Amino acid sequence: MREYDYKEVEMLQASCEKVTSFGTEVQVKPIPGVAEAGRIDPHELDIIKEHWVARGMNPAEEDLPEWDRGLSPIEKMRDMMGFPNHNICVDEIHTKYEEITNEEFGTTVGIWRYYPRKVMRKPDKPALMFIHGGGWVGGTPYTVENFCRFIAEQAEAVVFNIDYALAPEQKYPIGFKDCWCALKHIYDHAEEYKIDKNKIAVSGDSAGGNLTCALAMKDRDMGTHMIALQVPIYPVVTFFTSGNPFTFDIHHYEMCDEQKEIIDGMISIGRPKTENDGVMMGDMYVTCEEAAYLPYVSPMFAHDHTHLAKALCVGAEFDGLREQTEYYGKMLRDAGNDVRILRYKGVSHAFIDRLGFVPQAEDLGLEIAKEMKAL
Image (cartoon, rainbow, N blue to C red; front, side):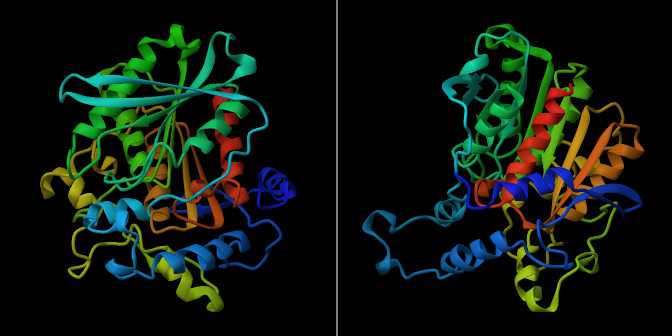
């Protein structure tokens, strides 16, 4: 089910311009049917008006259903995350679930597995391990299930969807180590899953993009070479502590006057912290400020970015994380890695959560599938 005409996806597949960002090439996908610069995609704008405004109403406790009263701030934050998306698959996709244990911390890691029935017995399929976003404190595998199913269908692959430990209950490095355990488990059981262990991709959005970059770095550092492709989607690659190699610049964002106020709110994530920001989600992920400089927490701070897995770095035009996404892509490219940097115009942070509502999410699924097939 789609809330847009499929011709818009075809237009995105056929259209791409090249621009320069931070001195490196970025491929930019246009808004289908919209030529004016600095505008929000019409589908995205409809969602903002219908859903974001309603979510910001903050009803009084007594107006909430009885089962939603007395929630902690963390629980309320988690409830605000995600978006009800659509399953747009045509083929039958099978789903299986298993659990493994992170022996170091004793945590249980849930792994959902999706694969098209028509290729279930086909050996040596490519694979994707997906890590959901949510600022390390929220998000669930359920939000990205349809996106994972779609990639499994289009790539004729096995896609693994990881349920890792969340902060603040379990801070870094537990969630990161959960993901590492999942990656190693998938690699070690490649024959059982009928996948090619040399064609394993890792992807994730936002905090999941951060974990994707960190896993690629650890894979390089350990000499395990389990990851053939990394796809960080609007990743957090720096916590904006002092000493960043780049500076966020609001003037890099083109905004039409008519929508400037809305767009300014859309790019709130990823801006440098101020004294008035209070506790940020990243602050709940790490145990101390010093940890924000660790390369597996802020990959941008790593001293060595060479010999990392091939990368597709994905950003959204109206996302404050676009700046660091594209700069990190430049860092990887300058270090000699095979890197493609992709920007989607007109959409904002977490646009893959809106699969079936915005054509850009479907187009990205197709792009990832093509990268996986090319491994």
